[in-house]
Image 1 (cartoon, helix red, strand yellow):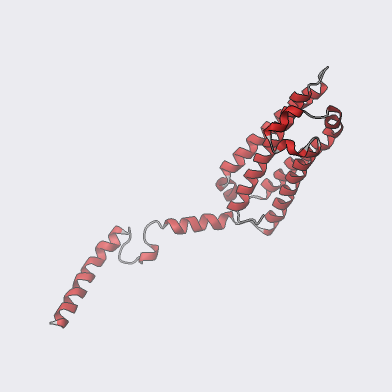
Image 2 (tube, one colour):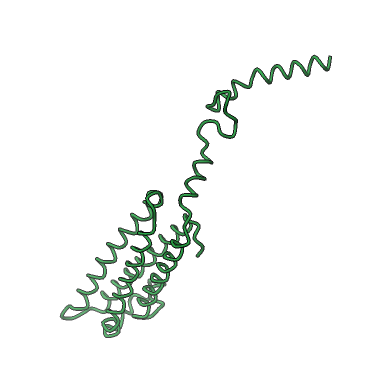
Length: 195
């Protein structure tokens, strides 16, 4: 009786095999691990395509260092607590200190943009495609920074510069640099680049 039951179970299982394969999208020649569209395999291929090369890691490190330097230069233009808290905005900035460091700040921002462009040149087409949302946001942030720096320059060259308006412009620039850094950190995570 046990032999009959085992044989019946074996027959039942073997007759169900074609149905199981059909549901997985495969025929009799495909195995379960590779049948149909395996999303884990697709994700794995995308992750491998995004992995940074040693050169990309080097250029990215320079990019982050340039961002850090621009952020630090901006903070040196006034009280460093200013970028950390909205409540310091009413104090304004020392306009002579801001004007005196404006060239240095512009240079730091230019270096930040240049190092980003160098990083973009190191990316291959597949990486650019996968990182398109982040890269689009960075492009928009670059445009915002250019506009904000132009507005700051207008404020500083006005007949009677307003300390509060200058400080407001610098606050906006600081926030944009913080967003820039945040987008680069997201790219680092996607490309498995250690921070």
